[in-house]
Amino acid sequence: MEAPWGEAFSGSRLRESNVTKGISNSTNPLSPPTLPEPGDARQPSHAPSTSGTTNDTLAPSDETRSGRQAPRVTTPQAALAPGTAGWGDDTTLANTQLVKPTRLPPALPKPSTQVREQTPSTLQETQSFMTVGKALGLTALGAAAFFLLGPLGLALPALALGADYLSHRGWFHRLLDLTFETINGRPFANPAGPVSDTLVTVGQRPHYPLAEAYGGLEQAIYTIPLCETPTPIERLTAIEDATRGHIDNKLALFVKNDGVSNRSTYGGNKPRKLELLLGQAIHSGAQEMVISGTAGSMSVLATVLHAREHGIVPRVHLTPQLPAPRVARNLVKLARLLSQPMETSTGDTKVGSISYHEGKLGAALGMAGDTVKGRLSTGTTPFVCPPGATSTLSTLGYINAMHELADDVRSGRLPEVPKKIFVPAGSGGTFIGLLIGTKTIPMFANTEIIAIGSGSGRPNLQPKKHFDDVVDYLVEQTGGEFPKLSITEAEIGRIVDQTYAGGEYGKRTEGSTEAEAIAQANDLALESTYSAKAMAKMLDQARAHHDGEEETWLFWNTNNAKSDTLPPELEVTEPFAAEDLALVREHLGEDVLREYFN
Image (cartoon, rainbow, N blue to C red; front, side):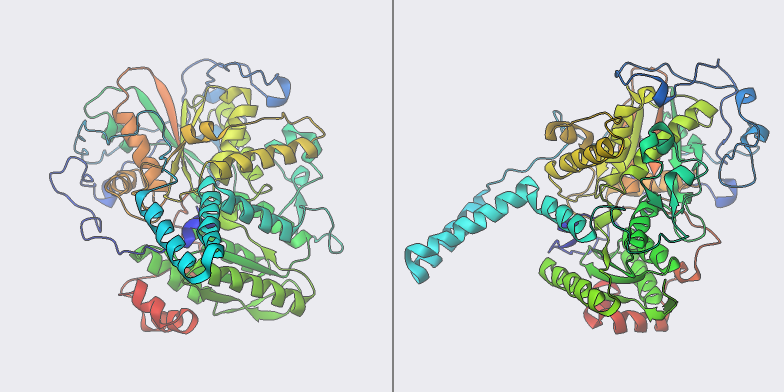
């Protein structure tokens, strides 16, 4: 996930406290549990349920989108199609058996019944526009301006107040969205030349269920296939044990593991988006890509890796983030990648670039400069990757993912329709795509999307407008076949929970530390900025699930999973090698080295 542009320029960069670093085994009831040894970890059961009856398949194109509740679907093992790929390897569902683990891990300690306090009326933290400090500051500015400039000086606090209000309402983020999409142009409208052989329309893909549901998309959208789909569904047995130690809550917890969406280059949630963005960039003839994000941005890292692999030269602009070991490792990886020559799409050999900026003005000027220089040097306008790789086009990747999840239910990979889906929220494309899926696929009419914010501070207007843009694009591309949906800012506020962010982007919290530790018992790697906070939310809700109803909940993992086949540049060990520190100093400067490697 990626921090929205606004949070990328946060001025506060306090280091993590000693309390939040590492894993504590104190008596605090929210402290993470002691984990089993790696050799004792319980293997998750991948097999679908073999009990229950088969219900009729609910194809989105065969039913009216009336919003009625779809029946819960369970599929016996015998109903699975032979040879259906299950988890991206040579195991097929038809041959998969439900196997009980032969060795159970040591029992996780029973967690406390205490649940972190939540905002009672709404999940979205709201902040007053006018505060005492702001009022005093504006008064002082007005008095100084009046003293120096006379009555005209009163325009300064008025302008400052207006700009601040627009930012508070979300128009700053909205303006950025529109700026990036204007520079990049309408997707696939005017190819720069003959369409590249590397591009594949969604209709030519072996299985792209969104295009199968809406035929008007089949030849309208080009992609660069990056994803190994369907991504696996796995039972979170260790996490179930951790939450039902004191309550028989009858919850079945599963993960949709997009961490392995791409095992050879970089996985997580970004490949689903970059399939479309790289398709748009290559279709437009772009030879360079301007990329921005925070110092620890995994979205930037994923985009650099996939862009290089397809011959597009990355020009990276980084902004401050709360220092942490993960951020330092990310900087080493980027410095390594962007110091190496690469072969471009035109057959030339070039080296990308990386810059670090202390604020938004410097980053904006740097990006503008690279856009102009790229146009002059290559004859084509560089593609400007939006923050978090989230655009109107790329969000289609997660609407398609919800259609994939419907296939997971029909095939038995997921035993029944999930009542709740927990997903991290940063730039918003992932959860907005899933949300639109629940509103257009009857099977998920009663599935609740719970998006957990990262401390981005993005007002609800931005995801609301993004929702509208995506729907308008699909209505147009399908000739009106896609339903005209709408959503309010208040609805977005009820979906996005900002109370787990810790008050600052990138801050490790007690809940995220616990969630990371418990997830490790399920061989599920999370990170503290996004995915662990979403898991913390699911843990708290599971512990509070007292009504005894049998429900299936799904956690959508967006964090890249480690793999032996990932590029060697991603293998970073600590203490950092002298040559890695020298690369950081050369490409990012001495100040960055002191800030993040102290």
